[in-house]
View 1 (tube, one colour):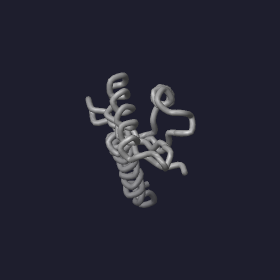
View 2 (cartoon, helix red, strand yellow):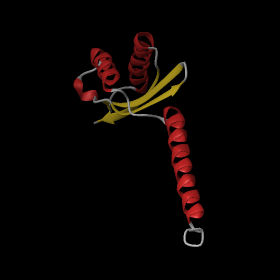
View 3 (cartoon, one colour):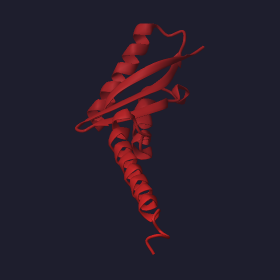
Length: 118
């Protein structure tokens, strides 16, 4: 029997190596995704939109959400549209107010990027 199946150890070794490699990739992906950024949970996204719309109209259309989880510290960045004729200082005050409200209510550090609507 040994002279017919001499190759079986090599094939089984390749299969086991592939399984170990796939498992390692899965573990690495699971560990790094929260650091790199994951899709924002829909429930949290709705809460954030509700906060935004208490300060701005629906024209602000929050978009490009990036959520990072660094253990006890959660970080969020996203974009909003503001009137292009608005003063820069006024736009930053609005963004700062929303960022602080999100921090206070959801305990998520936030950075808002402003896109303009003309």
